[in-house]
Image 1 (spheres, rainbow, N blue to C red):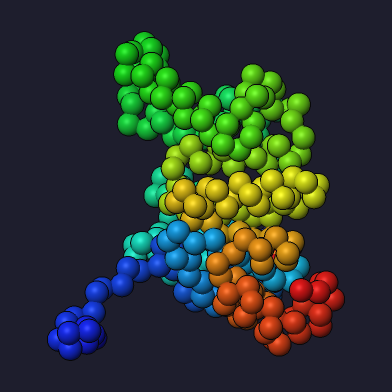
Image 2 (tube, helix red, strand yellow):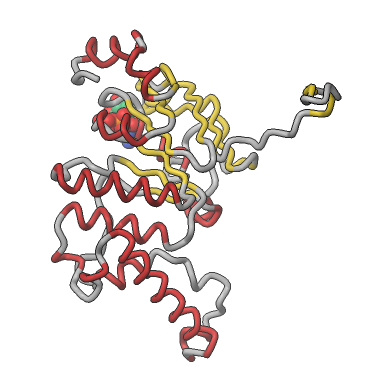
Length: 274
Ligand SMILES: Nc1ncnc2c1ncn2[C@@H]1O[C@H](COP(=O)(O)OP(=O)(O)OP(=O)(O)O)[C@@H](O)[C@H]1O
């Protein structure tokens, strides 16, 4: 057993270290001859912002699909707080506290901004069918709580004034914020963002960065997959670089920016500079 000598010279057992919030090991997924994910190892510490970057087609989205259960044809281990969630159903993984966004925004244009946000909470789990049908006091209480939380989250993401408008009237960047508010409804342990600022104007990129910083300071852990290197480097505590389905490097943003292998993967692959 590891032991520590304290300043008084007495040897005591080392405090047990908590497992990473999310731990992925030897993750693999092939499509025919294409090894999209080829033995990926990845760790995300609780309370951190972890960035994941890598050239086009290196397997980032496939890895996220495997982690979140949207692709169940993967092998390898995925653990949340030390417990296996590998190859579970996506709903089960979401209920366990792993929430994600998608590259293609998923909001319902024909519903209001508030209704969209409120849909993010799986609040009626555990309520038997008679509750919504009869609008029982229990159901109405859950409904009130859901509305209050949705309103608070819309304020947080800067959409409070738009809660009564149709989601279809929002700009592209605002829809991304709405999707984020929706997934925060269930108080996830970790939020995985797949390209949160792709196609977003520079002002909104700055606003999203500030928002993610605030949410992180309030306790939300993020794994961010993004091509905007500047955005990732400015926000992340640690950065994981993927190349050809594997982890090429991981470290602080400063370490990654100096890493010869990373520069080669980007510059050599013609994917733009770091
Ligand atoms: N459903 C699929 N069927 C066949 N091949 C696929 C499928 N999904 C992904 N691939 C292939 O797997 C590889 C990894 O793709 P993936 O989308 O995970 O990469 P990525 O790093 O997210 O790319 P980008 O940064 O461009 O979004 C690519 O070669 C891609 O063409």
